[in-house]
Length: 149
Length: 149
Length: 149
Length: 149
Image (tube, rainbow over all chains, first blue to last red; front, top):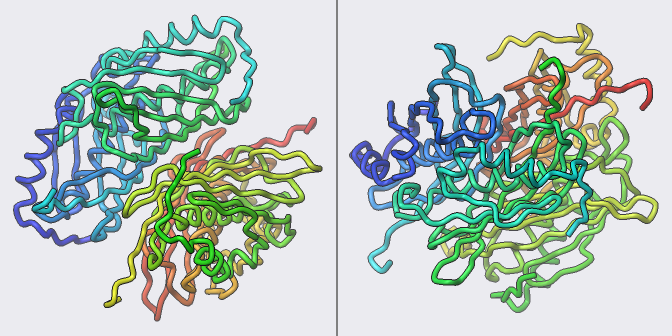
């Protein structure tokens, strides 16, 4: 793993505050379980209201959690005043999202001044056994809030 | 647009039935507004419980609706007994998802026996003006239910 | 199609000059056949030295031409002094690249100040019949050359 | 790393034979430097005939080598009689491809009967220092040659 330097020593408070404002995450039941420079980890319980036609977690719902994991891994390295935008992401779905709970990990691969590239992994925990079910690669953009805007 | 032939003349019933089983879509408030061979269109109202940190619709939530749009556009062309899996998708987020309602369109670009390639477009309707906010390209897989499985 | 405004009225000269410096494109035999604000079209003959194991054009070689098509479609809209970088692209390969010649089209979908999003399509011309064989979606970045760098 | 089981004990011969038929790879100067179940590594020298407008290796050329790396990592795990197709891939370009030589690594992440998901990494070696310059995620398809086809 990389050893990233944060620009904002108080990044943890900043992340928790921003995450609390992502109502989508609390609605999905996603919570932060680990946080470090350039990485974040989420947990999410299975929820019958977010399934696809076969009763498994919807691939798009998984992707929403993965998007936030990639985004917040990048956001740990951004300056205090920055906002963040997802530019793009790609998801590969390796196995059905069958499980009682899910784990999402986001890691920065390449931090840049404007763009940060992160990768995410989603795991299903099914009867106590964890399995990789999806991967994400995504580009995040640092938006500096200026006095004018 | 392409002129696709369906294998299942009763595909509309099959799509509506499968869609009704995607609790994720009803939870998001997504509904089918148009359906044709190789295409589907969804509508979704803004919902404050599905936003990111700035109050706009979460990119991952958008992607969930786009994933279903791509998936069901492909599913219109699949045989009666087939199930469907998303193999992968990529989303490019062009503008913040600012609006009172949203429209999602999925179109098959290349139907194949095992894999179907679809594209999706997401639009925000903000004060009556519609704007393209995201694109998706995705691969869907036909899963034939055999007697054994 | 969109009606894009160029920032550099002399964009055609700029594109041709930059393209001439992409030795990869001349090595592949790619040439510009159409150019307009936000779009470009290339032609490329089949070349036995760029095939995969079955004698068809290598998917990665196709992608190289598509990447340049997406890039130059974006570059038409950039300022005179800008350089361009590809941030990312995704390719979906729909059919084997079987043909005597190939056509590549790049179109800007969303121009932004820093990032430009383009889509590309690759066609094989086989015995006079044209077929869509691949699609690309890609993000391009405007790099402004400053006095200092 | 995963510990993959091959189906074809003679996979090394099969890979080398197929690779020798990819004229695109020999034209680019790519060679196999490591091979194991589910992984492959390539080397490629800088070549002035494959550059973009600034004299760095063209992103699309990089992607061609990465595509082959992902493809052959998957091909190690396929049955003796199988042919392989790239379904899709995405590349993220992290830094300009500046260097005297390049290294490409392809690793299977998830092997499936029909589809195999692989990831690739491209490195530039510049004045003896190696740097990650691009990542790929890609889906490969096993094509079984039947008596009929």
